[in-house]
Each structure stands twice: as structure tokens, then as C-alpha cells.
Amino acid sequence: MARSINRLTARAVSTLKVPGRHADGGGLYLQVDPSLAKRWVFVFQWHGQRKEMGLGSTLAVGLAEAREAARAARASVHGGVNPIEARKAEQIGKTFGDVADDVLAGILPGLSNLKHQNQWRTALQKAALPLRAKQVAEITTDDVLDVLRPIWTRTPETAARLRGRIERVFDAAKAKGLRSGENPARWRGHLELLLPKRKRLARSHHAAYPVAALPRFMQLLKTRQAVAARALEFTILTGARTGETLGMRWAEVNTVEGIWVVPASRMKARIEHRVPLTASALAVLEKVRPLQSEPNGLVFPGQRRGRPLSQMAMIMLMRRMEADEFTVHGFRSTFRDWAGDHTNFTREVVEAALSHSVGNAVERAYRRSDAFEKRRRLMDAWPGIAAVWPLCPRRRRWRRSDGPHSGDHGL
Image 1 (cartoon, rainbow, N blue to C red):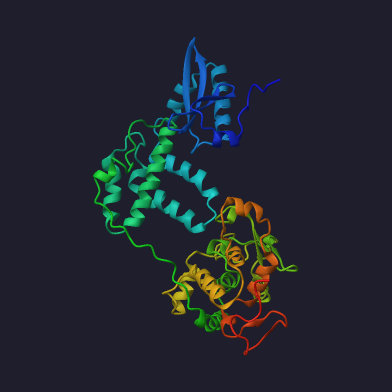
Image 2 (cartoon, helix red, strand yellow):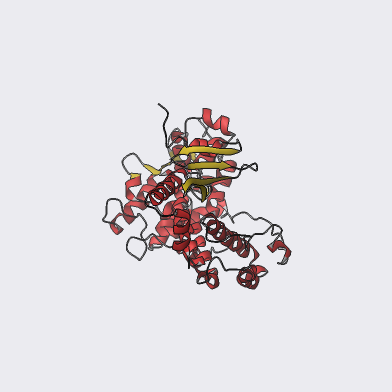
């Protein structure tokens, strides 16, 4: 017997490309427009007339959320209340700030990078502050321009990101039936005609610390006593991203096996990543262990209880060490330069150590291994000190006479 409700699957919702309405049951439909844009529609009978209630775009509303909204609408109809009118009454007086906070609540859990989370909060809670108290249905293009113009030429990249985030709030408001008509923050054919053309900035890579100078930097770093120093040292030793280190918890670490498992939820690619922990990395963890008594507490806690170290802590430390021309993320570039120029490890092993994807989807599907043991040998030779005192892989000791390419490190 066919199911009367919950006919669709999440995969079907994401892959359907046939224009028309696709029933999930219980009055809920997935509407696929000729442009292949997708939205949810709840269809019901009200006093003998067919009514349609929009539940939002699939980009903003997932299958589970749409089903819950349809369930609530059905209950409303059965209770003798028109869900469309009920929603209008409920949504009268909604401000930009109300909708922005709802957008943040939906977006932030999906962002593993703490820096990106803070950027979204700053944009919608501080930069867009003049809009927050205004009725979202009454905000005009001029209101948006008043927010953007003061920073449009001074910080163009920041202004462009702010515009996009404000646009998303208005899209969400429209999906919820809170406003209609043109999105006042839309760029193409709208704000692009009203704001000066931005100068295109040349893309630059994160400044990488020189490989030859890294051993001395690491020695100086060890003399620093701050938690930020241990976090930076650990970040360099593991080739991790800043957010991965700051969000690290003790439950992710196996000190016996020397493995750190970063969950998919905190990885940029949303794929679980295993990191081999060398003796040096484990020594760092041993130093910071007394800072946290909870079994699953933060490895590098900040000053506020339950909060991680600040994003700026390592940056400020580098400034105090007179290394502010470089970036924390740039140490990953240093690692890549060192591995490519001073070892024989294959590109696939090096990129896997940096949690980068290599090859197309088919190649990745057949490459089941994450080259963990090869990566462990690679990390044993890091950081950079191998460029001066290369590691002999067979005897596991440092030899001044070995050249930077001695031994087959890729095996």
C-alpha cells in the first residue's frame, strides 16, 4: 500500500528536475518551477475554495521543516482557522532584526569556522543595526543604501559581503510571507545601478613563514607560557586550521594511539579528518591538560568558562613575536612548501595531511585510504626543522649528512 504522506526523500528534493508539483502527502507539495527553482506549497480547502500557502524555498526550508509547517497548517485548518490569515496576524510587526536572528539561528550551526560565525553575527547584529528595529515589510532600497554607502568604497569586500547577507534576510522574509515585491538588497539590475562600481582586488595567498626560519621561530614559541602559544604550536605541528584547533575537545583525542579525530561538523569539507599526533604534538597536549578538568572540555579554553580561545589570540601573539607580517593560516602554506621542496612524499599524501581533496569525484571514490601511516611519517619530519636536520626514515634519527631528499619518504 502506497504511503499517503512522507512520499518524498531528501535526495529526491535535491535532485528532482521535472517542473511541476510533486506531492509529499497531506497537502504538502514540492513546486519545481521551469527555472528549476524549488519551493514548498501547502494546498488546502477553505469554505469550498482551494487555497495555497507558500512555505518557503528549499534553499531556506528543509524537508523536515516543511513537513512540520504543513502539519501545523493542517491542524489549524482542522481547528477552523485559516493558516494563511493566522500567519499574517502572527507576523504583523516583525522587524528586520527578528528575521535576521532567525536566519542566524539556521545558518550558524552549519558553519564549522568560528571566524565565519562571528562575521555573520557582526554583519547582521552590528553592521546592519540601523535596519534591525524597522518593520521588515517597510524597509526600502534607500534604507539599505544608508547602511552600505558609508563603507562601500572604504572597505569594499566587507561591504559586498554585508549586502549579500542583508539580501538573504529579505529573501527569508519573503519566503515567510513577511514582505512582497523586489528585494531591496538585490545586486543585479538593482543596487549595481545605484552604487559605485567596486575595484576588483587582486587575490593574495596567506603569507607563509619562511621554511628556513621556522626552526628558530618554534624554539622561541616554546619559551612562551600563554595558552595561545601552545595553541599556535599545536596548530603548526599538526597543519590544522585555526578553527579546528580552537574547537578541539579532549574526547576527540586518543593519546595512546596518537590520533586526533576532527568530526565532520567542524571540518571545512564536512568530512571527518584523522590527524596523526607526533611526540611533539602530544607534548603540547600534556602541557595544557591541567587547564581543563572536564572529560570533554575544550583543549585550549579561553578566559570565559566554556568558551574557546579567541580567534585573535594567536594573531596577537604573532604580533608580539614580531611576526605580524605572516598569518596563522600561512603556516599551512609553509608546510606545503616544505613538503614539496624538502621531502619525497607524494602530493596526495601532503594534500591529505592538509585535509584537501585531490582528484575528481571518481578518483576520490576509488581512493578509500586516507594514507594515515604515510602521513604520520610525514608529520614526524615536520615542522620545517627537517630542512636543516633531515630525518632518516630507516634509523629514525637526525643526520646532518643527509640531503633534503634522502630516503624514499613517500613509501
